[in-house]
Amino acid sequence: MRGPVFYSLLYALACLLVLILMTGQQANANSNENCGCHAIKSEGPFVHKPVLDGACLSCHKPTGEKHPRVKKGAFTLTDNGMVGLCNECHERKNVMKYVHGPVASGDCLACHDVHQSDNKTQLKAPGAQLCYKCHTKAKFDRKYPHPPIAEGKCTGCHDPHQSNVKYLLKGDGMNLCILCHNPDMFQGKSVHKPITEGNCSACHSTHGTQYIHLLKNNYTDEIYMPYDKENFAICFDCHNNDLADDLRTDKETNFRNGMINIHYIHINKTAKGRACKVCHDPHAAAQARLISERIPGFGKWRIPILFTKTDTGGTCVVGCHKPKSYDRINPVVNP
Image (cartoon, rainbow, N blue to C red; front, side, top):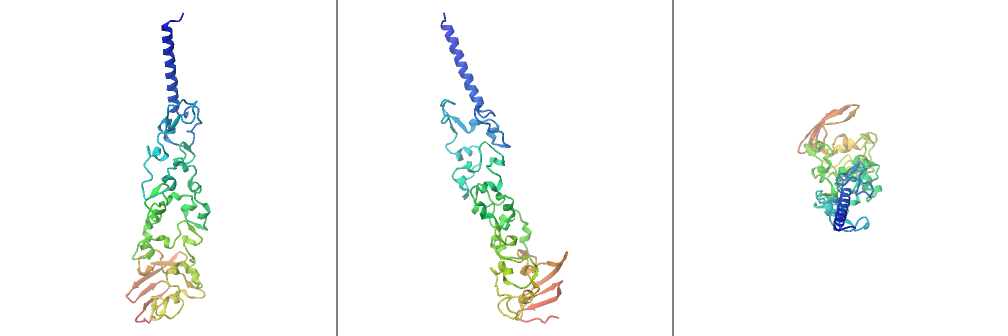
């Protein structure tokens, strides 16, 4: 006959069994087995740290419902939304002036897998492939693409979360460009006006273009060619496109000796007209008027130029012809 002692022992054993089962569930919930019954979530090369540590309960919390009998509703996120949950560990990514759409809407999962991924930072796709899930790839297909675009490195220029600069750029104007380009090329005694304004995009397309050097309009890559205004279209977007039309002028250009148009003499030729870059640097130069100290010559030799500017003209001592001076008011007779 079973007495009170027997039933007391049986009750104690039952309580112990319940405690063991509860402890086992807690262990499974915090083990690398991903709560025992669930698919393994820690086999990818890049695994979210709580998953790697088996700390499922750092993001998921039990609601008190019996699990696994109750599948949905037995656990919930530790915060009502993904942004709040992510911000429990990560620095906030939505506090700057411009915020990426998915970040602003709290949809971190648009780009990231919360458990594991084949890509760094648990991204759902590598590089630009992720961007093209929302942004149209054809928009960035160009004959001459910007190297970061060609290499799928959108984050070379853009922050994927937030920025104080429009378009989520990592820098404003030229400050962005000098993250990669040598800032020395934008400094000198004379600096091209778009450069002084930090406006590289006045001439260059930031993603890509059909023209060489990412230019927004046509410009020849040759040094000598017959004169054609189309060869200098990018220059004539701002500069007077009549500056080389006439041999004699008193207004089309300041580069003249009296009324003799020296731009015309250099450029407007049927066979060997000079390109603008033969004399001018498009960014900055150590001499006035963006005149380069050395220009393309023959083979490895670069032709030297020493230019001295005056109030009404100047003098060129150059390796391709005798020293010559010019004056708009009092014409110089050169030898």
